[in-house]
Length: 87
Image (tube, rainbow, N blue to C red):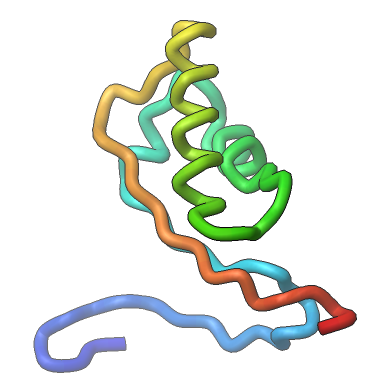
């Protein structure tokens, strides 16, 4: 899809199938682990109160330093919590 010189991709998915929608910078590709594993670990939220993504990112990066698996580029991400089935 191209609009005003900006290119990108999109998908239409049924909301009921997902609790979260997220995006991350290309820094997520630079960890000393698979991208899939990095995403799984980054999405391991204990709860969705307040700044849940910020808390999880900080804890994850702290674990990466401890395990010598830090990214070689900066990493950023944003997540929208769509809610649970019961909501």
